Image (cartoon, rainbow, N blue to C red):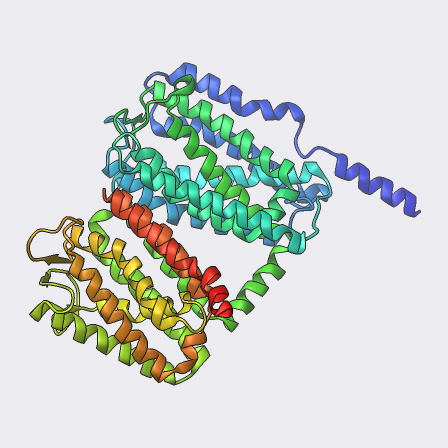
Length: 534
């Protein structure tokens, strides 16, 4: 009896959801429509010819699967309802995340469309483009489901600690590529490339950092789910550009056109399909939920870490929208100051409020003194937008608080008064040129270092000594604070400041500040040894 039941289950699972020949229908429909409408095809007709037949067939296959006794996502998910919920969530995320970015592309004239080829526009983008966000996400997600049904049993094991290196290295490489994309924005021809990589790769890095090891275990499924829709969309996009349904700016692209398709367009379909497949594969993997619970538990035990993530994310859009530099500066500084305050509260309790009050008051006082007397930084004047205290922009005393606490954590144990002021000076080698360049403040006279005089850095060193001494005197345990989280912020800031300075055409400031920040960070290794030797 059991053998007969097993054989029946196997036979039922082997039954194809749709006939094999039916997968040829979408290309046939596309060919027939192309012959009828090209070269005057509209964007709506493009959907009828290329995207909707493919989506309809995949939707029919997914609808038929449960009626043949097969889970809609095969052995990939935890039930059909959960699989459909994951797909729906990804459709919403894709629509929300892509809409402002795509509007910006059309606004910048990276791509556009001739008159008469679209039904209507909302903002800068045709309604057919909004539909494309939904259709692509649904199509790729349903194709992933179809492959999961065909692949049979999948490996659900969690690689455990062995996968951490895979996740860390992969995420770091992806962030490096994103930084390269940001640098591409400094050239006209790199505009489209930079906008794609700066928009997509930080998210891919987060996905890989969360579950790259889980994706590697399913690499065949993941690779095929990305590759097949990508190649199909490449072909459709190449035909659409050839028929001038839409156009891509030759001035804002690098000019490499394999098979007539701009490289950036090819990359766009790769990264968007990667975002969909990575996200859905991770959401459906059984090991993801326990991993997410552990992350949430860590976040509750270290609540400053989510704030630090928000701080890092708030800095990403700055190169993409330089006109809003001031807004992003206030947002990122607020997140950083709040994260440091939450960290101090968990470590030092109510005394953290006194530490914050001392640093904030000191920041206002020393900056008011500097602007009105020229001591200790040199003569300068503020022109920064936004809220101020006694004429001092609010982000400045918030910065003194956060920077001072991080500088103390960077210093080796027992050497805060010696090293932390140097950390602040190294940080300011990049910070002040950037702020002067963006019009937040201006120094009197001419200065060789991007409008910043040498006296400013001497002033930072002296002010740093006074502030660090005050904080350590108020809370002696600060001298032994070796927070890995705050040190990680400093290293991240060295990277972000360097990239930002290059983007804003301050390359030598980027080189000097990054080198100086890495140099003071190296004191973690050699100063403790010297201390022991003495």
